[in-house]
Length: 171
Image (cartoon, rainbow, N blue to C red; front, side, top):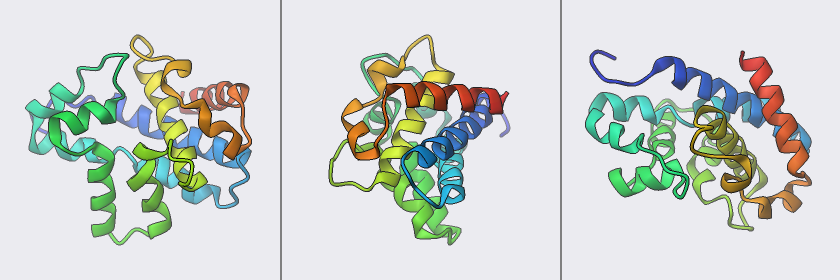
């Protein structure tokens, strides 16, 4: 990526971690097509690479994180859209199936009780990946919306186990 400052090791670890956490949580939530969810988890943040290439100074601003604001909220404040919005548009151009794109397109609004479980699972997995990557800024209890747990039939311990699984497998 030339002289942009994207940390590719961080990017790939976060993407793989998110994919593994998504797959693990999908199983726990009773989603049958876990490979599709793994792919959604893997691709949900690809927009970051595009932003670092096209607007590195804005991407740097997006990476100035604080515990009071979720990364995608910061991205929307700075860019007017999130990295996952860019990812969804890119995947549409690549003719990736809509069932993979849907959770990526909507996971930033997963707290809406009417949204489907794929979106909620991806949201929680992305939060776990953020906690893993930026554990000096975020923790599970502050970043994950526990109001989504009942609709997924999961609990806090499931998050801990999904995070442990993703961490071990990513390493």
